[in-house]
Length: 199
Ligand code: ITT
Ligand code: NA
Image 1 (cartoon, rainbow, N blue to C red):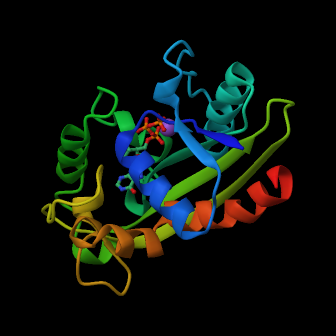
Image 2 (cartoon, rainbow, N blue to C red):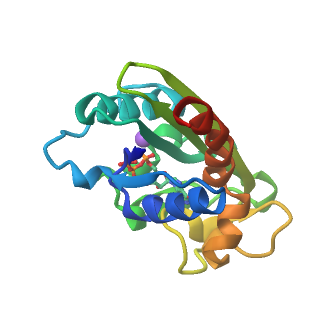
C-alpha cells in the first residue's frame, strides 16, 4: 500500500523514513512533494494533534491514499509552553530554523539553568480517504543550553539537551536521536495502528 507522508519538511521525512523502516513498516512511502498540485493546508488547529490531523486528512482526501502527518514543536516551561505549535515560525518566516533558535535564546537569556526545562512534542496522525483518523503523541524532555552545539538534526536540536544526556540532540547520531525522540516515540506508536487499519 502507498502511504503519503503529509509533510514538506525534508529533515522530518528523513527521520520518518528511518523510524518507520526500523519499525518494520514495508509500505511505499511517498512525500507530499510528489503531489505539488495539492495546496498546503492551513494549520489552524490549536494543538499538535489537531494540526497533524488537518495535514493528514488534506493529503488523504486529495490523493485517495492513506496519509500520515507529523506536527511537532518545542515547548518551554518558563514561556508557558511556547513556542509550541508556533515553533516553525517563531521568528516570523516559516521554517527559518536559525532565526527561530536565535530569537528563543535571546528570550531566555536571563533564565538560569534551573529554569530551562523544555520538551519536544510530536503528534503523529493517520488519515484514510474515507475519513477514518487516528492520532498518537510522543515527547522528549530536556533542558535548553545557552548556546547552540552540534550540526545534526534540525530546528531547535542544537539547544535541547535530553534528560540524562550530556550532548544536545544535534550532537546525537540520527539513530540515537530517533531512539529517544518525540517523533520516534509517536511514530513507533502509530505503526501498530497503521498495520491494524491498512494491513
Ligand atoms: P510540515 O508542516 O510540512 O510537516 P513544518 O516544518 O512546517 O513541516 P511543523 O509545523 O510541525 O512542521 O513545525 C515543526 C517545527 O518544530 C520545526 O520547524 C522545528 O522548529 C521544531 N521541531 C520539530 N521537531 C523537531 C526536532 O526533532 N528537532 C528540533 N526541532 C524540531
Ligand atoms: Na505546525
